[in-house]
Image (cartoon, rainbow, N blue to C red; front, side):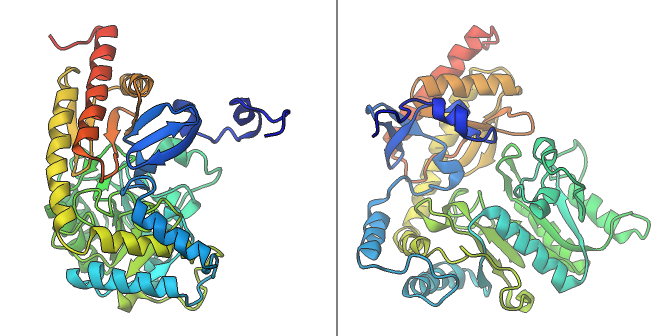
Amino acid sequence: MPKDMETNSSIYKRRESNARSYCRSFTASFDTARGSELFTEDGTRYIDFLAGCSSLNYGHNDPDMKDALVEHILKDGITHGLDFHTEAKEAFLHSFNDLILTPRGMDHKVMFTGPTGANAVEAAMKIARKVTGRTNVISFTNGFHGVTMGALAATGNGYHRGGAGMDKAGVTRMPFEAYADGVDSAALLEKMLSDPSGGIDAPAAIMLETVQGEGGLNAASAEFVKKLETIAHAHGALLIIDDIQAGCGRTGTFFSFDEMGVKPDIVTMAKSVSGFGLPMALVLVRPEHDVFGPAEHNGTFRGNTHAFVTARVAIEKFWADDAFKTELARKSELVTSALQEVASHIPGAYLKGRGLMQGVDVGCGDLAGDICARAYELGLVVETSGPNDEVVKILAPLTTSEQLFCEGFAILSTAAREVAAKTKIAAQ
């Protein structure tokens, strides 16, 4: 390193945009990572309960994915291939078809979009509009679908919507399940769509997350999702499930809707679909809705070959049978039990979410932020979510060992207890 090169964090404040976010809370400079652990250059260790915001469901540097990627690079395998046919893409498609789609009776085509979840959402909304000839999309309170303009229009968060700098049109927002006490959200939507004076334009699609990751871990029931599918099809609309954060095993099954008895017309995927934290996004679309012409929705990086390599290994390693799913069910129970202990330190706190996408609503964003900050001081990386950041959200790698889970939750429980005592709200 040249002597005049900055060796501390001042370069970030001086040169990196104010749009930076996670590094404001987690200020260490991380150097290496393995599994569910992060290390700084001096060897300081942190347990990772954030996992790249669910982009690292299989942990950091999975050895089998790493070996496959290194082998591909060392043989001068294709790095960038637009949407060319490549050995890596073909191998991924075979594994995805044989181990994910076919066993679930899904006939969906696989569309490779630009590498972000928001790009996949943009494509999904465009497809629905082209299929139906309509423009309106029904989305839900507290939904988060990305910050590009189309996805942002469907996003509920006022802070992010405020960054648009222009009108956000083409979306009607409805209350998510249990958003308002005593309101049957699905029945309300059906009533408004069926009423010629209901005021909602005929929709191209109904789009939702089955568990609202950024919105506070609000989990939809299978009954609610099935009602939305029925409503969508009764009114000539498509059902889009945004599985970008809740998919790839995060809720205990590969798709978050696997056991809900629905077959979405379109599914968006990103984050952990590459298995290794590499940028990759997919749109799964029923064949009858595969209406784009060549390059009608395109992008220079719509074929990340390195991601194809690692994604294939992830599918074959974790989803070839039910062993991983069984393991996730056991870990989900562990997470629930541990979070109940955390919640016991905060009067009125309660659990939200499902599977390994759970958290504790402590009722106050400042309190949740203080708990996460103290946990970070004790060696745990964990974040908040919700409209007021009031939920302490667990997104640990799905491969986290039970020992590491227990160690991490012990830290989180200590942080909750200490913050509660400091703020004089400890349970009586």
